[in-house]
Every structure is written in structure tokens, then in C-alpha cells.
Length: 340
Image 1 (cartoon, one colour):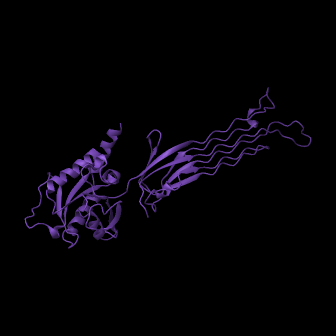
Image 2 (spheres, rainbow, N blue to C red; image 1 turned 45 degrees about the vertical axis):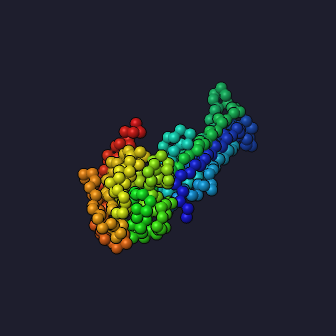
Image 3 (cartoon, one colour; image 1 turned 180 degrees about the vertical axis):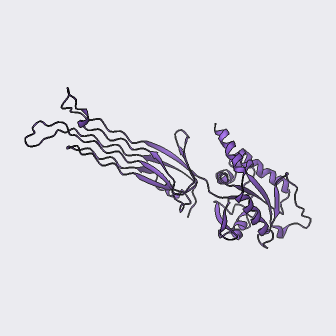
């Protein structure tokens, strides 16, 4: 299935039904009072999360959604039927914005979460409501309301515990393939990964966490070079960032600083998340390889996805951080300050 993580759709809630102008007419009651019924409410438009969905692809083929119109009121005080609501399913992790204002309408992260995005118009009121002592035969009804109509921008941010970040060919896809059941495309050339991949990593009995592999970052990704800008959003929700650097890199420290710089330019608060550095491809490391000395407090692990060396220690470290993560508190606070 093709992966699509952004979409623009138009939604239109139903208009209300018209109120009825009617008078009671029965045998022996030639001049009965007003009995016009109310119109039905127009249908609402809802969004609902569905954990079985992983892409916004469907919205590339269907962009317009319209709820049902309320039925008109009738005589004998009969109220029209409400218009039929429509419920649009979206993947967990979808952020919904008003396309005209940029305002965030909803950030949907929980399965089966439901949010109203467009309200149906109220039904018109029949003439039965407007009779008074001095106006006993009102020949008018209150007009119905119009359903809300707007364009929605939807952006999908993957829901993962660990995000793999690195240059092309850093070994991200190989790592996720050996730690999980994910089967990403793997080859010895840059940008093999063109879409994010999710994998569930099993850890001991009944424990697991979700790992996301995003396309490789290159210098200038935050400004739109390569594929980085398009997919950096997918690490915003992760609890832990794992920065992968190949052991045969010319300058490991420089690569590390470049990765941090690109994340900072995209979203400075990302640097508040927990992170570890993984030196990959130790099976082909140069003979004079030495573990790099990075900033204080950053754990550096060396692994080989081919031979399996270091993978047990890596899983232990990731699980410990995922299950006891604290840094998201700082991240959320920083994001809230920026939005204010």
C-alpha cells in the first residue's frame, strides 16, 4: 500500500430541513390553529481514528464529504427526520487543521477517538411555535440553519516509541528488519527507504515497543533538501530518538552534529527528547576504529545488524528508556510555550 501522510479534503455538514406552515384541518374543526412541524437537523461530519489504518491514501481519491440534509417538517406537528451523519475514519496520529486559518482542530492519537468537525444546520421551526393571542394564524416559519462547510488539512505523524534517525545507508532499515518483523527495502545505495517503516520490537515476555525508520536525512533536510523535511515530522511523537551513524563514516562527530543541527532547525524542541547514538556496521569497521567521545550524558552503543553483536544490549537500553521516559514532559512544555 502506498504511504501518504498529508491530505486536503472538503467537508460539508447537512443543512436543516424547512419548518412547515400548516393549519389543522379536521371535520368539524374548519379553522384549526397552526400545526406546522419543525424541520430535522442537518447531519454532522465526524472524524474517527481507526488503528487499522496507516495512511491517508484514501483521501487522494475522495476529497469531498457531505452529510445528509434534514427532512422538512410536515403538518400535524410532524418533525422532519434528522439528516444522516457521516463518520470519516483516519489513522491514529492524524493532526487536523482548518485549512483557511491554520488552527488545529484535533490531534487524534487514541484508537476509536471521535471528534466533530462540522455541525449540521438546525431545523427550521414550524408555524405552530408562533401563534399568540393577537396572531392566531401565523403564515410563516423560521428558516433552517446552514450546515458548516470547511476545508481540512490532515497530517499524519506516525505513532512510535523509538525513531531511527541517520544519513542514507546508516543501517536503519537493516536494524529494523532484524529487530522486528518489518521488511523494508534494503540495498547498498542511498535513499533505499522512500517512506517511513514501522516495526514492533518484541522484548521478553509480553513486552514490546514500536520502532520507526524514516528516510535518510542529508545536510539541508530542514530546508527541504532530500526527503528529510517531508518525514522529520514522524519523529515528533517518539519517546526516544536513536541516531544511527555508520562505523566507516569519515567523521562520526561531524555526522552527529549535522543530525542534531537538522533536527534543531526543523523543531528545536526535538533536542529535549531522550536520545542515544548507535554506531552501526561494526562488522566492517576500520581497523583503527575508536568509540567516539560525544556530549556528556549521551549513551553510545556499537552494533552489527549482520552479526548480531550488541543487539541485546541495544534492546535492553531502548526498553529501559521507553518504559521510563521523562523527556517528553520538557518537550511538551517547550511546544506549549512556542504555541503561546
